[in-house]
Image (cartoon, rainbow, N blue to C red):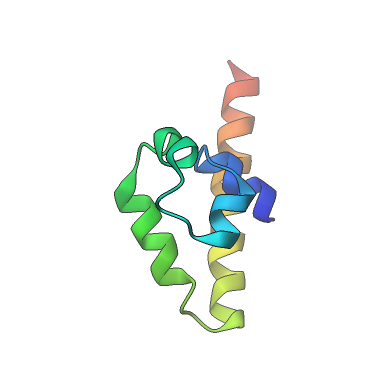
Length: 71
């Protein structure tokens, strides 16, 4: 799941796990700071609420993939 999230955010799993804003190589990859900020908020959620967020994200990613295949 972490790998999927990193791919969706166009960053690395290391960045998501280590939360290192000073890593220039990772910072250069990030384009949506608002989304990153939201995910940082989600980190404070309970495990159950985090799982709900992951399910929604996975559903949106799956929908996008299906839409791309239908083109």
